[in-house]
Image 1 (cartoon, protein in one colour):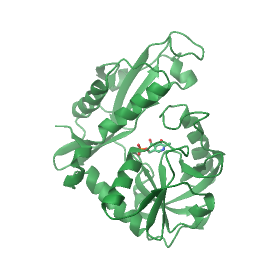
Image 2 (tube, helix red, strand yellow; image 1 turned 180 degrees about the horizontal axis):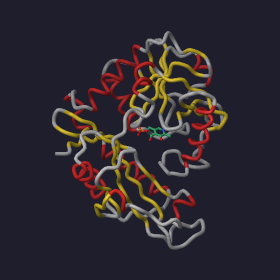
Image 3 (cartoon, protein in one colour; image 1 turned 180 degrees about the vertical axis):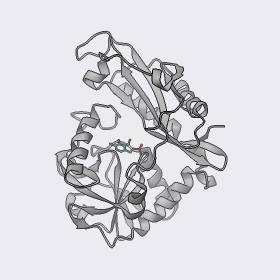
Image 4 (cartoon, protein in one colour; image 1 turned 30 degrees about the horizontal axis):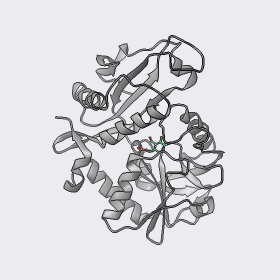
Length: 304
Ligand SMILES: Cc1ncc(COP(=O)(O)O)c(C=O)c1O
């Protein structure tokens, strides 16, 4: 990771090296933090943050679920993200807001500790690789089930959820795959360790429902809209592991991963490796985030 000049830390801009926390920070011990992953992309009119408001809304929804009282308004966090990118002079970057319980009291109850927020940004290329976005990646279905809303609400982007993702991701890497696909406890496909998943069969796109142990991805919602706007039929419906294997195309969506085709699952090649529907959606999505499509410009917050 290449350091940038400054990080927004508890309401102030501080030098990158000074954005530090105590080792007894409550969140470090119990996972009581909620974060976002946002991208700022270069456009002909300067850097533009993609669907910033939706990301901030999701962070506030997660905080509500966890009874976390945020000491900031949505507008303050939106401004923090915009100002941060401007302060660091970056054309394109990943933006990471996080809110967490600070130190003071130990023990499971976080509510006595002050909540601190920070926003950092840095340059970060395609999470699953440029080559992956072009040629597709290899996945394995994880033996770990995806967390369930009766255990940890997947809709809240709480750091604790990522213990589940880390187990799946590291097992997938150890087995020689690029990424894991997690199933729900009842055997339906949920998502990747940090991406939503889509299946294409006979030109129709399917993606698991919001109730199936997934994070409601901002990219997922954008993909659904882009597909429908461009005459591609999309259904939110649950599907099983065997339907992964028999897909014509599979792809992941996510802020970090963009749109990445999946070329293999559990040693089975997916379709003929050409991904026409995925590539069509991928192109429109990339054009949208780079400000090349007027219709989708309202999704962009220009950092001028
Ligand atoms: C578990 C999980 N699912 C899906 C996504 C995709 O969400 P988004 O498109 O909002 O980045 C992410 C990324 O944050 C994630 O961590």
